[in-house]
Amino acid sequence: MTKKKEQLIKVTLKRSGIGCPQRQRKTLLGLGLRKLNSSSILKDTPSIRGMIEKVKHLVVAESV
Image (cartoon, rainbow, N blue to C red; front, top):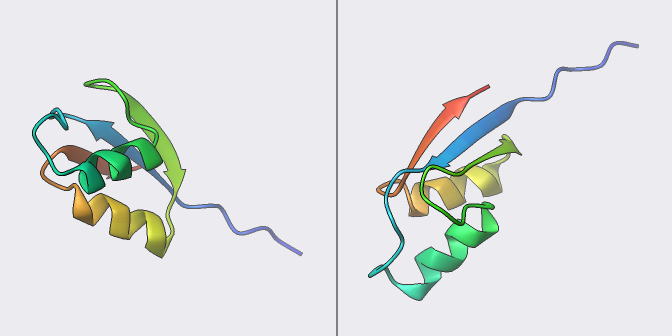
């Protein structure tokens, strides 16, 4: 049996969530982003992709 390599996404906060709706700020916290230029490495799942899509104007996402 061979293991499939897990796909990962690196998400970096590039713009502040100040002034954004609370729902978007909670999405940033759900992604593990608190301060500017902070990064999180997350599994590439449809739910994570949806969260990134909701705050795409604040973050930069790249595959690892």
